[in-house]
Length: 274
Image 1 (cartoon, helix red, strand yellow):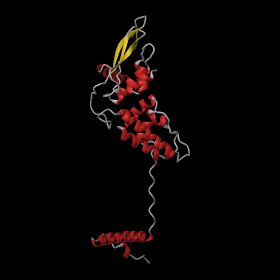
Image 2 (cartoon, rainbow, N blue to C red; image 1 turned 180 degrees about the horizontal axis):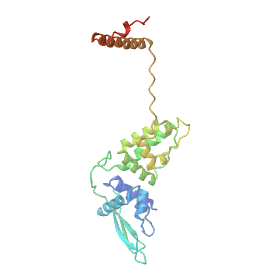
Image 3 (spheres, rainbow, N blue to C red; image 1 turned 60 degrees about the vertical axis):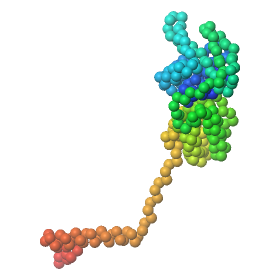
Image 4 (tube, rainbow, N blue to C red; image 1 turned 90 degrees about the horizontal axis):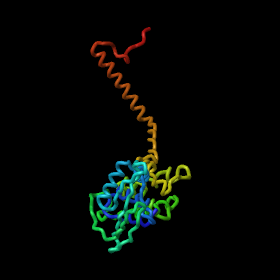
């Protein structure tokens, strides 16, 4: 794992969050010593919580931008194995610096150039700033969670590690951006189950909520408080008497109408036979 490369991956501007997640996990497999990087597509799909096709599409996007290059590898018997990746990540905050090239296990020279990068906009992502300020928004989302956690006595996370950043980016994307994320955490705070008001304990902590399945349930309302049952209407004897009177009057009207048509005498006027 390369902390430096994962940090660079997070800083790459102009990428959609999902594409950046793929780049992050690719960088996570980069070996700083020999430059080797060859995670399988299945491994990337598992870590990124995406389908293989989605991972392939994002890898193609990264390759078209010059951030990675791929080399097809084969076993001694000729069968295919995981591709070898070369990362060419740039630091938008650095000025014309160059890292010495590292030789990969396959003899490839890997250049890690660090130059100012002209930002490329590929379209809008929900609620993320046009300047690609994902880094600031991720930090703001993390601080928001910490404030909520302290308020309702959840475990307060201390460090926003790179894996947490990656997971948080995914969850923010699923929620529609920073404001959507805040709305979901506020909903979790109000949940009697997640806040611990119902049982006195709660499974919720930062990493638990960051899990894809748990966050999906939160968004779908699985942890919402049940709606209170409607209260039974209070018995009103006056209203009940009025309703019974109306029913009797209706019956008498129907009998009178039948009598006037020659069908029979009104039941209310009939006398019992001697």
